[in-house]
Image 1 (cartoon, one colour):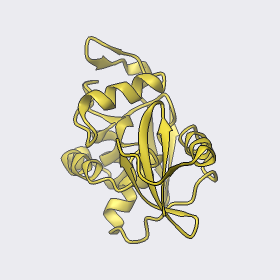
Image 2 (cartoon, one colour):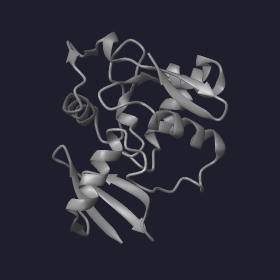
Image 3 (cartoon, helix red, strand yellow):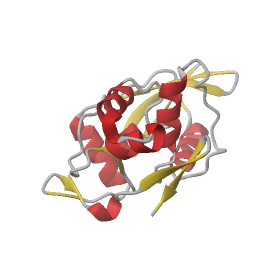
Image 4 (cartoon, one colour):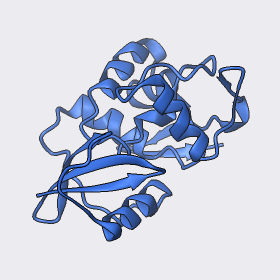
Length: 168
């Protein structure tokens, strides 16, 4: 079943099976608009992790690990490709791999790849478009001045066993 919502005026289509989100698509309006699902998606993006059920079991472990790390970036905050690499693999060596993984994200907004940016504060690429990434970050309260996100908006993630948490 396809439903669509507006996330800060950006259309997002969600593919849902048995109440579980299988995939999301940016800039698409398919199916009927679902105000309740819109409320749940916003609640999820703001940290209410039980608001939505979504499917990642079909992903390889290395991708799942990266996506689970990105999900822990709070609303209004960003992390770098390098910090996610460090949290997942113990080194920043895999920063580009993290970027490629974000580009392949099957669940944009749920897995907030738009909150993953370059370590120098530049937004970097985005499957939706770089302009859409900046728009979403601004709507979530992240200030971008002269093309850069300020260090005050960065969060760092650390591994706690198989779980990741944000640390200031």
